[in-house]
Length: 234
Image 1: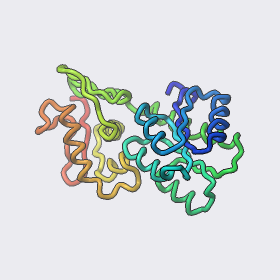
Image 2: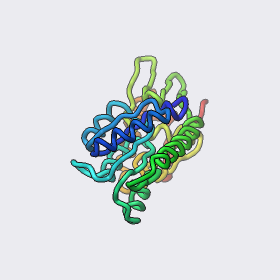
Image 3: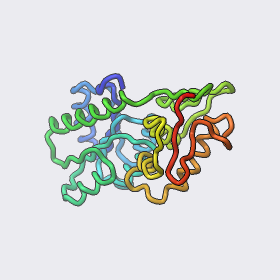
Image 4: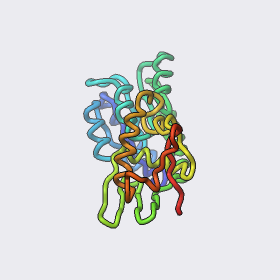
């Protein structure tokens, strides 16, 4: 994002009138790209086509619920999310926030309040994004984290969403050990238990893309019994 108004916003709700109303107000507020979806399937297709910078998710959807949709989409990419729902019980709100969503707004709502909450979420995300490395130099290999591409002398390899999330976390903490728990939480969210074996598999695939000798890694090194570290420039 250059500014928050360049953010790609994915709005998911099965009410066509509400979709149009919220999208129109976001456009009027200055947001350039607002994509809409009316079901979990449509949302997953839109997400796969292009990763948004913010998701606004209804909970009651015709082919599932927003909580499950958030889990699926958030598993491979840490995209900020706001739940927008008629379910106003404290248990639902706390459950949504506990999944890792940034905010929860109940219907009916004031449009100005929604716009303010969207603005605050994107401002936080934008400030955090400015501090994050966009490219990672690993000797003769360069990784473009924004485009999820590994540029090597023998060609270019694409990172999966999970590999990108792992490498982004390691790059954020470059030169320092990142524990297994911290890596799993960064990739799979708070409900990450049981993913350590999956993490090891993704690390192996990642090394095959960034290391000259994956069996003897120079850059993505293991801190035995603790976690992994992305080595600094040598």
